[in-house]
Length: 169
Image (tube, rainbow, N blue to C red; front, side):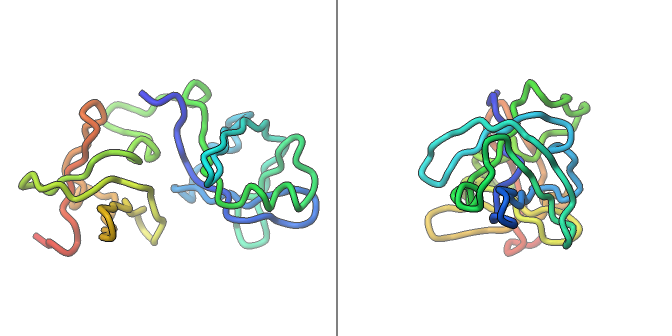
């Protein structure tokens, strides 16, 4: 099992004092209020552990985060686009039959008849339920993360069985 669990990304800098807006795969998540540190992975693949100084709600319901040692807008702007990971050891384990959404990233996706559809590259919040973003080359599928479309999740085998919207059922 991965030691880090991606739960969102830094969408932009906020203000002049080093705050950033963190978008979570699950907008209702309180994980940032429950942990003291995160791992950021930049688009270039560089990793950096940062201690959380403060978390607060922004004017549009956004989650604003201050990190220790990040005090200028230039520093926070440089974090834009970074993937945000929690250390698994800092999180309470999911209940039986549940998974962390971030554990789905990286799984190989297959249709119910066994055809490979691509790899889960991330999650996208689009209303009532998040959507798995599945990519295979230039093709991208969005699959709602609900039982009607996500048929099976096998973390040990590294696979998920889904019924994409365009296949119907």
